[in-house]
Length: 408
Image (cartoon, rainbow, N blue to C red; front, top):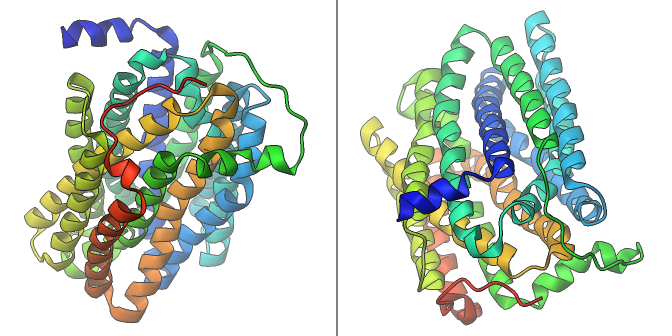
């Protein structure tokens, strides 16, 4: 029965196009992450500069996401994504050209990454808001898990391929990522959207910040995305993987790619399970337990000196993280009316960006102050502490039983 339902879901052409576009995009970004992390560490041998890579990716998202969310609710989301990915592709090809000609310095490197992040900031909110325009609310949880599952396939392969290709030269990695983003932009432009009635609003400060106002009125959504923010902010072990691969585990660039793939392997298997057997009850409690597992896995990874144990810890980290991601994204999208999805997705992107990119900066700074292993250990403990605190601050989140579509 589950197989039949999944097959029926895949008869949706636009969903298939979006899935392939996401795979292409994720593949590109995973390779890019490995390449820029390894190249920056090779240029500087500094945990602080690894943190700066995360910071320059976070700042554009913080500054632009609310504005982009407003645009996403007023203009064609497909066109915004398409233009953004074309610009990102061009910037990656500039990286390829610069690496080939040998004029990449740490300062120029950070500047180009900043411009890639600016373009990516315009891509994120409309991309998050697009899936509900393609599938109906009753199948959204299954579609969300399926989308996560196929995306994780690229996330598994991408880092390993990135590590292999980087050993042949960074130019090859950056050129391929640019091509993949172009492919994704073409596919996205061909998607057919199902639109809902739009509430016309005048453009003003209140309309731009309406996403924040809406989330503040929904304790369940606020609790879910803020839990993800602080948990991943403290538990950003992946930001320090170049140091673990180079100095602690001694496994080189290819080993870094394998470690980068480990969370995605766990995420793929878990998201495939969630696609076949969607969560039906105790979703709030399940999310909290998953984040605690994320923290425990971070602690194990921090003290491990074994490649196998480190891989398994990252595997569990990825599996537990995808449970949290699927629950959070489903709660956000089902609780939000279509005319607000762009702006709410923008706020969600800020939270995600804070937890990921700012989390990388926090990890880099903490590692430069206390050392790599203590910084990762502290992060894992902090993640668990956040979950325990959130069960008291947002009891309604912990008590959510089932996914229910908003009546708005």
